Length: 207
Image (tube, rainbow, N blue to C red; front, side, top):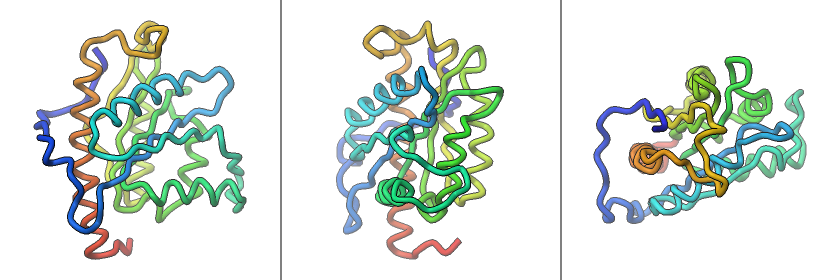
């Protein structure tokens, strides 16, 4: 079963997924954090994006960092602007990350560091994958990074341990608890996305 660091999370009725007042329904961006050749990230990212669409609480934008050439010196480029526009449109994020040498990919850190206001006062959740640790050490470090950027990280996360043995050939986890864990995390993320979107509309964040 995929590990989910979770407390009891109540499920929402269909009515809880309706548009929110006059600010509209929140939008979710799912980020593929690894850009390495031969990476596995697109597999769990595509699966989770489909679960998020089925959840039907938020429109989903699947973003692959490999599609953008982000300079490590943090210079501004057209790609930086294009990715920044997509991040700014999102009201919540799910970061899909592996664990490389007890940490997260350099490509992901570069992408995070290029932006500031795009992350502020928005919720961030994680889907990780790795060996025995399931990418959890990468997630714990990412929590510290996003806290510095004034983002709110979710307690719930999904982690796939020994990931090559977990996913079927069609990219679906073989473990029965994966869908339930995804729904619990999406329920929690949606609550925070709605709450923070309303708060930003009523009182712009100035952190």
